[in-house]
Length: 296
Image (cartoon, rainbow, N blue to C red; front, side):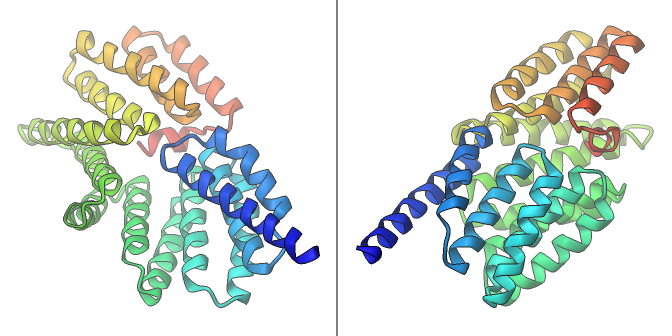
């Protein structure tokens, strides 16, 4: 009887973890949240606890509750280390890197992503190494090392394309677009126009792939990126519809950081400093700092 009950619980746990992963892949973290609570309660064996805690941490990260995410990811990492599970530990390090980046500590994020890369490489997990490289590229961009970030994105997205990894390809293209746009803001002459054309192209291709996957939050970032490019060019009439579409995508995806970016873009177009301050205050109340916003 006890064995039958344990098997039933394990079967339920597997179903929950599978559903959580599916929701995470399309950015539906709010739907995954009740399932991770159930998974944590069901986990009994150390390996099950490690998986459930890691899932909880990654969902909390997706919901932008970084302190909570860090707590659960560190718990999961401790279990994985005791189990000598390099791959599991690497995923926790990757998750911790994302938390540090988005809570405004990119130098810490770089260290976590580099550790994750080494663990994934030792474990022979090529995909994990690639996604850690993407995380590293984003952290480098947040540190202001935009050219290093661009080189990392360029090397990594080609690997995803060769391996027919649609999400990885889209992520890499979007990252390159962000980097080209950032570089254009620091340069003079004709080069910024070349950078912006490249960025617009990559945002467009990335957006089409994200739509195919059904990742609304990521679609929102590509729309916002094109809006930002038009804003830089002084094309208010074409920038505004992009920010409005991005705001809609972010609202549906419950992406607070994205909502702040879209609303700040609209406030800047309106020319109202008061509206811009109101958006920044609204974002800060929800844990989205100016450092996070500036990293884009």
